[in-house]
Length: 323
Image (spheres, rainbow, N blue to C red):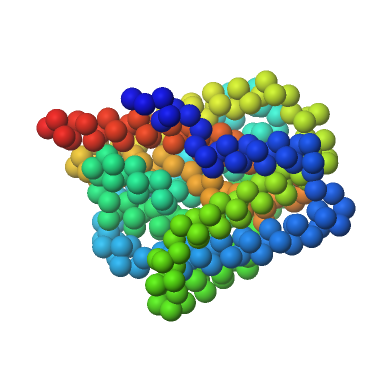
């Protein structure tokens, strides 16, 4: 096993660079207001390009494997949130209320797309089903995540369910996504030709949103409220959640009689949480500097899931080749 597989990827290093930049040089005043408007436009463009790039043919290829997709969606949007609620008595003494809010936000996010498919492919899983399942998770997450945020994360005992987060997501994320899908026949060749540039555009959008969110949090006194010792605690919490979900995914897929390829797909699609969706959604759903603290758990979980899944995918591949 190569050492680089355990090291942070380039995107994570850039994300933490944005946190450092915001910590020492936070956006303030008119500059903060201007860059916030730019980030809103970048988020809309990000989801427009997601819609333009999503292949309908690949999704249709795995569409009819409904039992697998139902299990993956259940893990993503039911088991994860329930786990966050069950662990609340254990986590609250160790985490601040803001960080527990971030853990619950992590639990209601959709699955990743690119990494879920990539790890499934490496591990010799059912790739068409992974494409369909991961894509469905991201599309449905535009509706389900803000609903779960209102029910479980933001309101709690403080008020009734609110449709406001859902409407914000629809306006700022869903409509650009649908527009991208509608225009996909026109944009398909351009999107395929410039895929490398569009990936950089995606990353730039996420980095800008992280900088804006953490700037607001730093101005409001983030580091005076958040001791660095809590970062280690967050890593342990992320590892615990990931381990429980992975064991649940493996055991449940076996109990339900899925074959090896499908079980691999369920494991890698069901255990992921999307940083790419989580960052812009947090910008829409959480006001002011709250988004900065809320994003810390998903950032740490993202790196941890990449490291663990890299090892597991290679192990599955080696076992398949040996057989």
